[in-house]
Image 1: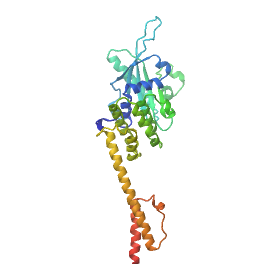
Image 2 (image 1 turned 30 degrees about the vertical axis):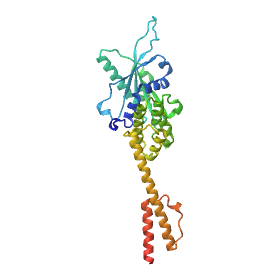
Image 3 (image 1 turned 180 degrees about the horizontal axis):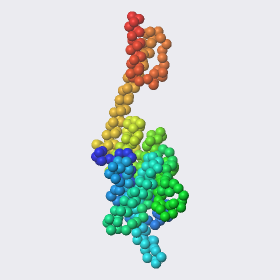
Image 4 (image 1 turned 120 degrees about the vertical axis):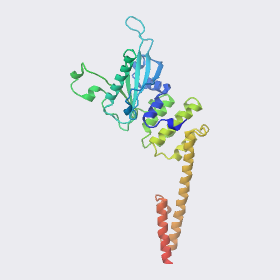
Length: 325
């Protein structure tokens, strides 16, 4: 996979991940209201390619629009089946944005405008916001809450609200049953937390349950690009060791995962070389202290010192030896 075409945080990764129908379907089944799911024909789920964002906002926001037909089991008062279409509008947020409701309303109006231009009728649009901030969502989820004022003012005005999926408040086992969606929501939930390194193995293991080796490789590459961009504090060596542990025979030569493993091994070698140099400097310091008749420092006292600091101590002790001679 061309790395230049891979998702980057957070918008592009969200679009990449939720463009997979199986992941979107699992999200709908688990996190939309049950009475809504019952009236939807999920087999008709189809990603819409049109976007409804201003060009100048495209780098800041991402919209994902799915169309779904109403279930053929529905019938009207005359007993005839009810035919119709529903749109599911997905948006993600990493911060509790107070203007989200207004933003979603703009999207919905643009969807309707486009349908009217095509000679189509208006149809329901269900907005769902996936939130992965560090704190619980606190912004308004409806226009009345956003604008404020007595309820009577909204009786004949525009009313709108959206469903918020605050994944930080949902137990891991309830996030998803689809393994790819598990890895996606797990990444969004933990990628900026202190315990992300502890969750990394589980998130990557989810990819083992995904289809073919080719598909696993594609998803792994996308996930690794996201991890190394959003969570640069994870040592490359740790990432490489985890990949090797989970995918011992499935890394394709030349893939992004292969490149990261090579970088991780090189980082490990450099770290080992650095530790060896530090150990040598500590032994030299102790030798010089012995020559000077100074109390020998325990090696543990130097563990937090950098190589440059140890070399500076060595230079000072050598100068003392030269002055004594």
